[in-house]
Image 1 (cartoon, helix red, strand yellow):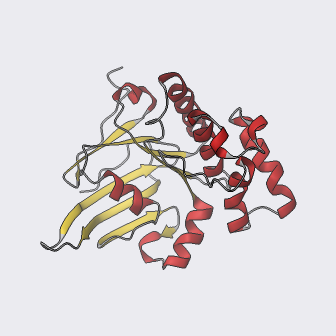
Image 2: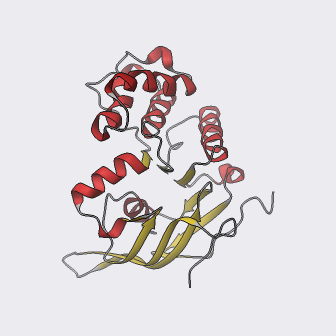
Image 3: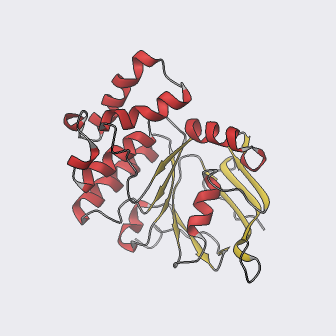
Length: 240
């Protein structure tokens, strides 16, 4: 049974019979089993579960970092599970913005060069447009004055803002964030979450792994993972 998103009949993401196994000396390890899920354009969804529940595997499959053992992944008009590695890298660069807990900014590049990197890779924008766009995104994040500094000189909150700007570089429809507030103080975390909520209001889809239940008010619903299986989505706002 597919858990249909109540907000839309035309999902951005459709997962059908999705499964992932990893080999080990003791035999196959099942990370995800028979996941059926739909997420609509413009939805803000939390992925919640204990360590080992399959959260990271699900995120890696959504972003094309890993490939499923079985089942299908449809995102927009793309059958992600059918792409080869080169096609996946190109699709991911144009269609998905990924935000990591530990920022993963390249230390040898300036902040603005980090934001420009996805544009350089995918050629979505003309070369003469890229720095201006990167500066605009950094301005939206409130750190344009840090553009020409190395990431190591920025605070954790500033680095996460730079990482979000980089994720938005090619104007993707889908943003996937893995514990993006895990290393931030509570005030900065709230500011980052408010920015993500603004992206959703502007039509972006955001799928976020989080363990911070006090942020639940931002999400339209939560996807609960337990031992590689997904329970029916719940509305986080219904009880608030």
